[in-house]
Length: 269
Image (tube, rainbow, N blue to C red; front, side, top):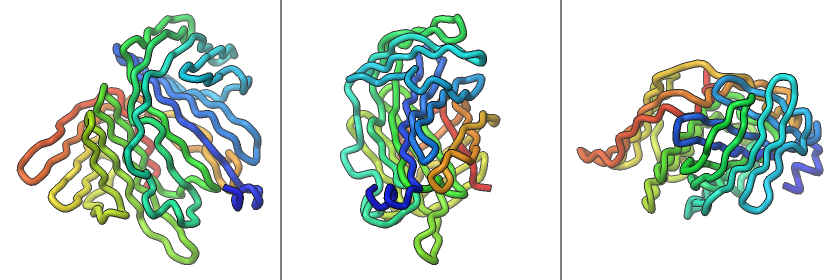
């Protein structure tokens, strides 16, 4: 982190996802870069840059919203239950490498309580579920896929990206699956194989395990993302896309899930 700051090309971002029991979801991205603080909100129907950077505050286990501007309003308080991070380091041995972007997961899932008023309509988040992750470094990868699904105590987070190191470049994979107390790690540093990557299907294989993701929708909204420490790039995220995924071990199906509230950024083409 000190090296990046000395270069004055540095960003840090934290991503909070909120999913209600009745299917309404939104995410808040709180970030800082060479351009200063940045606050963005993405909902099922649009993405918004928030002018008042103090209109979302995270205090202890509560997130306070007080956003009022022409293109949207969001007010209320949502309390976060006990956070459930992964038991192992997300980046594994990659964490010591001088990568352009490093990833962290603060909570694979946690319960939610509270409510918000979004564009004059109230939404309850009692018995909802949340997810928190973060990124830091200089750039987002030029080509990448990011996927998240969180349903109760089942969560999948997947990232596939082209990763440059010095004069070399390779495709790195991070995939984490948490099913109650069971955790599965399918990543480049533990020899996962990327069998297929396309806008509609991704297949990973690690030993006896096969993870298959099928994307059953399209669309998305533009969000600002970092390039050389500045929020000057635009990427597209679909916050509410229907997907299905399976995790199999030989002939045994461990997970077979359909999620109408998945999140997907496909910037791999």
